[in-house]
Length: 119
Image (cartoon, rainbow, N blue to C red; front, side, top):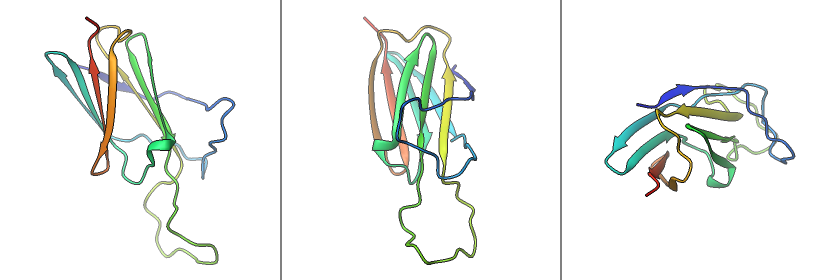
């Protein structure tokens, strides 16, 4: 089964800047299938354009940013519980992922990544 770890991850040369300095780590579920793996990451409110997915060795890195796009200027908040900033997630698998095909989609606030083993 994949092991979740979090590491410091910088967007080098990117225009994506965090809204606040606090990094958050979304929850993830990992399932092994006969063909590879399915990863579900809880990313409610994150735009698909804000996500980076990378494979290195036996690790899957997912990073991006959640921004509050619904509040206009000139308003003051009453209560803030949702984190709007950069996020990252590192999942380590028991075998290298190089050559695996990657498919991903959003469904009801979940990023679903399918990794199919190289044939």
